[in-house]
Amino acid sequence: MSQQLIRQGLVVSSMTLLSRLLGMVRDMVFAHVVGAGASADLFLFANRIPNFFRRLFAEGAFSQAFVPVLTEYQQRGDRHSTRCLIQRVSGTLGGVVTLVTLGAMLLAPLVTLLFGFGWFMAWWQGGAEAAKYPLANQLLRLTFPYLWFITFVAFSGAILNTLGVFSVAAFSPVLLNIAMIGCALWLAPQLAEPAIGLAIGVFLGGLLQFLFQLPFLRRAGLLVWPRWDWQDAGVRRIGQLMLPALFGVSVNQITVLINTAIASFMQTGAISWLYYAERLLELPLGVIGATLSTILLPTLARLQRQPTADQFVATVDWGIRLVFLLGVPAMVGLALLAEPILMVLYLRGHFTLADLQASKAALQTLNCGVFTILVAKVLGCAYYARQDTKTPVRYALFTMGSHLLLNNLAWKFGYIGLALASALSSMVNATLLYRGLVHQGIYRLTSDSIQVLLRLLLGSLGMALALMLFTPDHAHWLALSQGMRIGWLAGLIGGALLLYGGILLCLGIRWCHLRSPSLVDSSAA
Image (cartoon, rainbow, N blue to C red; front, top):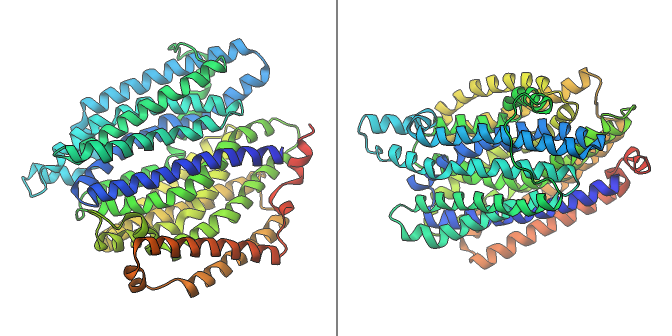
């Protein structure tokens, strides 16, 4: 099974990497077209709200509750029962999401008031930025249908993932990026308000993803007509698992919304600077975190039903090792190469040097929480695979409380205070999740893993020292042409990775340290 997990991981990570790279291209185009001004802030606000609900109804709480139950139905071997479950879940979930989508579109001014209160106050008082509030309402009505499309995209993707078909769901976001890039390049420049063109791109991207997955469901024989049935035993069970998880799996997204609401009181550009920083973090969080959680959840859901816990523990251990192997050097690279990366990607068009420095500060601050977010994704799968959604939500409540307290930093340090609060609260969440698993006797880092992790940390430290020694200063980067910047940056990244791998080899890290003997043994089971 170890080899199978690795193969599946490579497929998902390669598709996810393609999506993230196209996402970077999208953000480069976005920075060129609207920079970090008022249009950028408003579009990002309108795009962030439906994406928050997407985490609730689609990729977050729902998937964590649906996948273990669907896996259980599939293991019974009764295809009719499986189809009935899919039919009733899609009808019930679809009905709820339809109501939420239509309600949000009709009540867009109220939604904007809740999450962009600073803009509402400017409009109410007739201030200089009064036009932001009505434009935000208009953009929300264009972007919110994306929630409806992406909910069914995530639903069908979860079904295909339980069948071992991971590539379809991993590839789907590519279509969103293509739609948004196309609208940013050819539609937005033709409109008086470019943000409207970007919002139309979100709508089209959701529609394309929805249509793309239907043939794969049909081929698997699981494309059924939705049917509302809240009384169905499977639907009720998923609902019971999902309700507490609605909050638990969305801690990071809720903190982002809180940050957005506070940032609406700050200077124009604050939301955009945080966004550009967050988008760069999406590369390690997406390629590493999303890949691991996509593969680990259905795998752990199967293993937790076995009589012994050895394979379950070994799989969680495998995920933690990969987080150290890939996540720590990613953090080091982002911290030390933040300026040249931002310069290469965004410094053009409407994105200024002032925007570059502001985004750099946000990136380096948010980057402090990358490792703990990745660890939390792995540890969270250990809870959800056992259909325990209540424990993570208790920890999430505590985490949210700490984040609200830490947000007081924003009034002293501005948007940097918001970034710092997010990073620190992610550390609280990961710590609580690990302590909970230890307390329940479910998982604890093995001594072998601790030795491996220490060597991985030494490798990352060696890579950091080399980057500090060979990375040019600010003036040198500015003097370089764009082509030279790309060459220098590629050389630094490539050299750092080679050095990291070489140090690990010298420290005795081998392939066997990155797989679990328990998983290898289980392949014959």
